[in-house]
Image 1 (cartoon, rainbow, N blue to C red):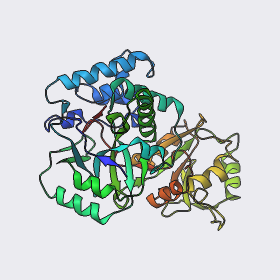
Image 2 (image 1 turned 45 degrees about the horizontal axis):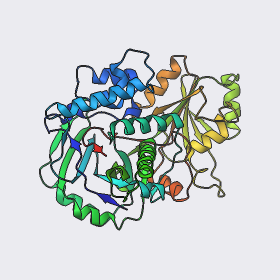
Image 3 (image 1 turned 180 degrees about the horizontal axis):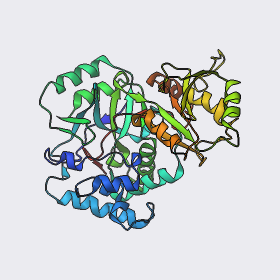
Image 4 (image 1 turned 135 degrees about the vertical axis):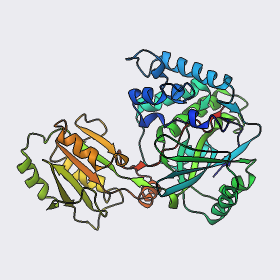
Length: 406
């Protein structure tokens, strides 16, 4: 894999907590507006610039991208908000949440590695979201949020990481949600660049739209440059690379609005034809092959029989749920487009599923066992695509700690 040090923008340590923002795609416009209220330094003013325009503004309108550029330039003018790094660097970035911590390398990766599948994918992108981030990157001439990549554990990289994090960090703060963010600055970063040259592949864990958009803008500028060399800044995109063994995947749960005309008793009977049902089950499944279902104020355990002929995608619990219940019984043939299904990140807990169903707005909820990193890699290695909303990585990377410009 090709990585390199870069001379990006980053906040001074005393401003980092105010600049840092959740990824644009895990908050709604309303949530982003609330999070950024009273904090003009939040990068949400760049990544979700519609929050600074009248309510009801189309988030994909030209006015939003123009406002994002205006806000981005303002952050660079304001002392200590986003300042240019004094030399090319890479960074080590640790996130700590509860008893879990993970430490990744902040660097830039080459778009040709993305195009040639040395950076492997497991999800399809949606055109509207990809177009949006492409326009934003092109407008800013920057990658404000990193792509979350993972790689198979490597002892050499672990030793390099341990040597750096034994020293004092550049900044260290706890976000309002309790997640701690710690960054170490590594000038030059040659040892990491050399070590990653021996890593054959990485995998997009989260941020498929950010990666695809960066590659699109890079290709546009490459095609427009008659003296293109491959080393220009537009050939590289911002990423954080984490060893697979440190990652924390939570389930991505489902709620469905109705029972497709079935009574609760008839629905249960039909579910039982394809899965073994137990009553008064644990709201959270305890192993792969199990799904917990909340219906009529009660939790049921569903267990699907394994099939030796199943491939890596068919073995996923989200696939079994889709193929045995959602499509044939509830007529949700395409969960990407159906308005009758919604997805709830596991960080919200099973109480959120109960709340939604008990409110009457949703009819049934499904609590999933989380997909493993090994399953993600197996599917990506096969060149296959995971079902939508299969993984929820937590904690989420913060945008604004380092920004790559081109």
